[in-house]
Length: 265
Image 1 (tube, one colour):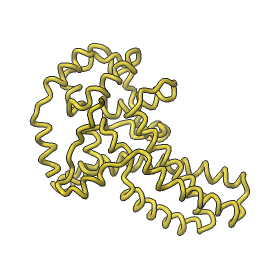
Image 2 (tube, rainbow, N blue to C red):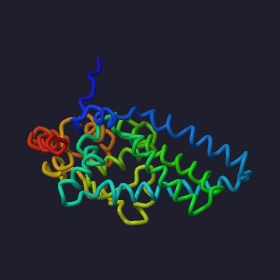
Image 3 (cartoon, helix red, strand yellow):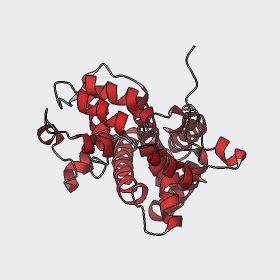
């Protein structure tokens, strides 16, 4: 029998701790009725023609990828200097980098996504008017759902298709090679535009990955299984040295986990 995953504890309050874990089907259950309703209104109430709807949909998906990039780069990775700012960063995104294997923390909690969704929809209604805001927001939500499930799949599954392998390689490089690059999860487009898509296939070669570098990118032994998958997946692309990885995992100080527990207390 598979043992339950031992998650990092974020809150002493059991109510808050419970709602920091999200089943992967929750975003679909929350947002698919909203998407369906808005698209129905767009066609049946506002009588928007299919070709216009397609153009709005394309623009909304591009807008989502830009939002995803900006949020990930400038909000999720903003650590700040004060203890409160650093704790907020850890709760918002830092804990995901400390424990990216946790299957219950790979999609956005609805308490966060609903608030952000209301803010975005209000902004779109002011900017576009209600008629155009509804279909635009529906496709924007579709982009968000694609992001959530791409992110879940690259952490939780071993892909077989070329596209799936590309997504996993791209995001695992963000986690294990350089967390200050490759901010796009559902699309690398804005990484190309803003020059944040580093050429890690040339920089990280056999014999060039030091124990310290792997240790710095591998916060705790919970990541061992995912890192092993990365090694197998990228064997011909990156050629990590498994011995260096194993040594780094063995040498990772227990003090790091103690710091994490202190940050969440």
